[in-house]
Structures are given as C-alpha cells and as structure tokens.
Amino acid sequence: GAGVSQTPSNKVTEKGKYVELRCDPISGHTALYWYRQSLGQGPEFLIYFQGTGAADDSGLPNDRFFAVRPEGSVSTLKIQRTERGDSAVYLCASSPMAGANNEQFFGPGTRLTVL
Amino acid sequence: LAKTTQPISMDSYEGQEVNITCSHNNIATNDYITWYQQFPSQGPRFIIQGYKTKVTNEVASLFIPADRKSSTLSLPRVSLSDTAVYYCLVGDLRHGSGNTGKLIFGQGTTLQVKP
Image (cartoon, rainbow over the protein chains, first blue to last red):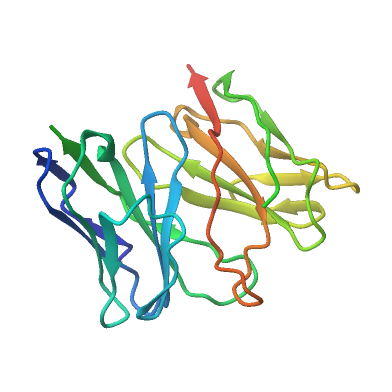
C-alpha cells in the first residue's frame, strides 16, 4: 500500500519568505507527527496531531512555525519569515495509534533550503 | 524519556554479524526499547522493539539483559545495503495516559559496511 508522502521533495526559498510543506499520511492513521532533521543529527520532534487537533506542539521552535490538519488526514507545516537556520529536512510520520509499540511510518522528507 | 548512549560509528564487512549496544541507565518501568534505521535521503524505519529478554524478527534481534540498563541490536550477516544510521530510543511510546508517542532521537550509530 501507499506509504507516507511529502511534497515538495525539495524547496529552496529566500530568507523572509513563507513556505508550506505538505504531508499525506497513510490512510486510516489517526496520529501524525512532524520532525525536523539537521545534517548529522537525529530527527527532532516538532508537533503531534491526534485527528484534527494538535495534541502536542511543544517542539515548535517559535511562533513562526505552525501546522494544521483540518480534516484529520493531510497536514501542512507552515513557516513564516523563514530564516537560514530553518534549513533542514522536515519529516512527517504517521501511526495507526493502536497497540503498544506505536510504530511510526516516516515519509521521505522535504529538504528545505533557505538562502 | 530515558537518555541513551550509543557509539557514534561502527565499521563492518559484508557477511559479518554486527552488534550495536545502547546504554540506557535510567530506563523506567514502563519504557520500551525501540530501534529505527535510516538510510540516506529517507525517513527512519522501525526495525524492532522489545521490553525484556530477546526479540527476533526477520531483520534483526534485540537482546535486553535482566536489568534493562542496556540493549544490543544484532544484525546477522550484514550486506552493503545495511549501511545506515541506527537509532536506539527508549520511552513509553504507548498512546494514552498522557503519552503522545513522540520519538526522541539521539545522534544514532552510523554503520558502514564494507565489501
């Protein structure tokens, strides 16, 4: 079956611009996560959705970052007034939220470069 | 979530068994031990999870001693395609009871398999 997809795969933008990154989770998965990964580091948690609501946004670095999931499926991560330090790979993961192990299925990521 | 310590890098040769040990001295009673694998330009992929003793699946084995303060991921007869970063994660990943299931990644172990 289809896995988690993310678009675009690459995004190059200029400092100060606004960007949107999209995540299509696996159908039926109610839990959705966004992570950010800098070069040479492990992924860093940003935000978690259970259904349509953001159940945990403690990882968002500041108020320039915002994410939505209006219908409980597709999610969009929005970054305002981008800065060079926002350059990273943004990963989305989904989980069926059943069972103890909470295996998360990751997408390939969107590589964001802020010039 | 318990802090984990694992080697930054390891080298191996094709056909060898590789063991990656992770220390987690502060593991809590409800914590599980989970390993993810990440290939370049891809999102992490769940490999295996365990609570105690030994767990084996088609990809790897996970050995957990009685005190659970460490764990060892064992990859049998590695091939070049096993070259990746391996992350050890410890935590109560179950949804509910206030848990969001978010994953906290460290730097991981970069495994390089040579011909």
